[in-house]
Image (cartoon, rainbow, N blue to C red):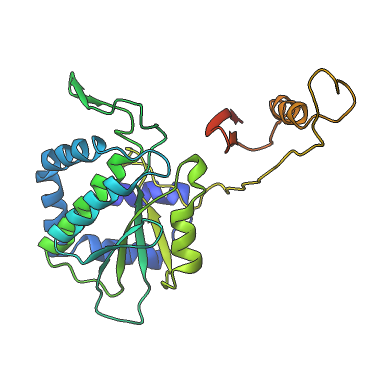
Length: 272
């Protein structure tokens, strides 16, 4: 535990009060039992991760996987429901209605289309499949937290909302978390997102996400009879893609161009 706090100190300016709170929680008997349970249940969690991965959840089509997660949350002791956009939400009740509400999320969707084979393969102690990490591991970890909390009857002051969100990837346009924060009416004080597979890495804050919808319109005309007479929306569209390849940023960034009509991503690029 001391090493954890030392590592935190190197990355963030963690207040003495926060350190005392973390140490106090970490040292309670129920939390220690929950952590030991998590270790013992790791083989089960891995099998559950495989089960989730093999349920398709391509962009904009997460319903089948969402239904699976909803039933699992219910089986582990929470009341879970699906909201109008497809988020699966379950509340772990705290003892104080005025205490802060924390959201723990993992996203349902993957970047892979319906045509991609998602059967998990095992090789030399590793699991291989599209989406086995991002974010099937996050979903399995979230379910493991639920089991540990409920089974050990851990008391929290504030509520914890467990949310499997839709629309995290690409054209999903973050519609799941947008619904959660902007229009759901749910009060939220803090959020922890479980994404991918590195349990030793904690990021505070995140990069921003800005999305722009651009339409190219023109008078049109016959490709031969009106050649050179009218501005071409198609040429403008193609030129914009070419120009975007030269974009540079002073900070690490990622971007893509998505053709909503053809449902394709044309460019995805990283810059440092």
